Length: 208
Ligand code: GRF
Image 1: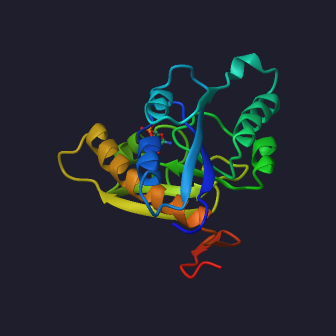
Image 2: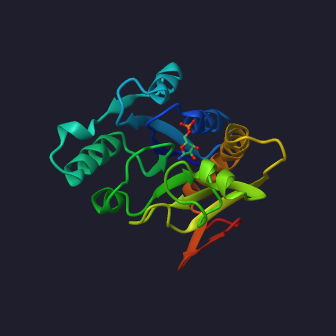
Image 3: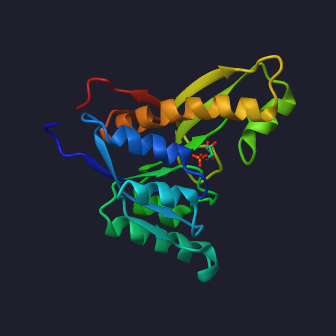
C-alpha cells in the first residue's frame, strides 16, 4: 500500500484470541496498521506466545513491581512509546488504565468488551447477559475513557442467544463476533476515520 502503516501496540492478559485476529488482519496486504509490540501484565500469557510466534516483540510489566497504579501505567506507556506506538488496543487486558496512560496516547486507546454496551459492563459480561436471560447479546469496540467500559462506541455486533445455549456456547458466539469487529474498528481508527461528536462516533468513510 502507498501510505505507511500506523504502529499499534496491543495489551493482553489472557489467551489472546482477539490479539490473534488483529495480528492476522495486520498480516494482510491492505491493512492500515501494523502490530509493533504486545505487552502484558502476566508473564507467560498465551497472548505473548502468540505474538512471539509471529515475530512481534513483547514485554511484561507486573503490577506488583510498582508502588501505585500511576507508576505502573507510566511504565507500560513507556514501553509502548519506546516502540513508536500511536494507537493502543486493549484485548482482554485485565487492568483499568488510568489518566496517566490515556494522556500518554491522547485518547488513542481502543477496548473490546463482550457485551452490547452499556448493558453488562465489567467482568464476566457474557455470563451476566446469559443469566439475565437476554435474547440478543453481542460485543462492542469502544474508545477508552476514565470509566469502566464507558467510552464512546465505535462498533458493535449482535448475536442471538439460542435455545439450548449455555454460557460457554454464548461466550464462543460472541468471541467470533469480536474477532470480526475489532480489526475493522482498528482499521477505521488508524485511518483517521473516527469523528467523535460527544458520545457519538461517526465513521467517515471518505477519510480526510
Ligand atoms: C474477550 O472476550 C474480550 O472481549 C474481553 O476479554 C476476552 C479476551 O479474550 N475483554 P482473548 O484473550 O482475546 O481470547
